[in-house]
Image (cartoon, rainbow, N blue to C red; front, side):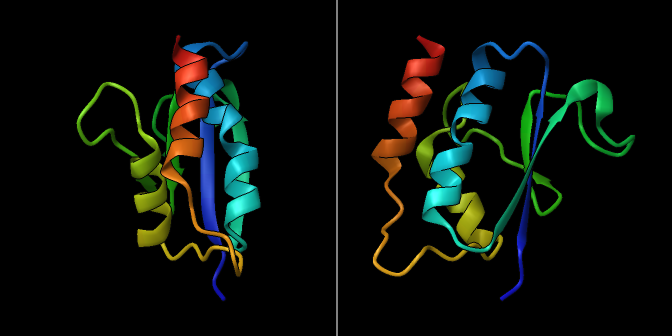
Length: 106
């Protein structure tokens, strides 16, 4: 099984979207078994990486589908599209992602 590289590029200290992206790390790890996650402060990002805050999955920035913020559906869709595989018996839960997102942006 091929690992799916996830980069979270964040400003420090994290607020708003930076805090939101950093907060979903544990949910991603507990849902998908083949992800490799790096949380990278923007001052240490590679020169080819986009400016933060953003989430990059297999080299592609996760973009919000219909809002200003990336939704749970956006995260799960991007991870699955990149080849992330959920643990057996675990169904990726959009509402769990959205709950974290709502807490961080409100």
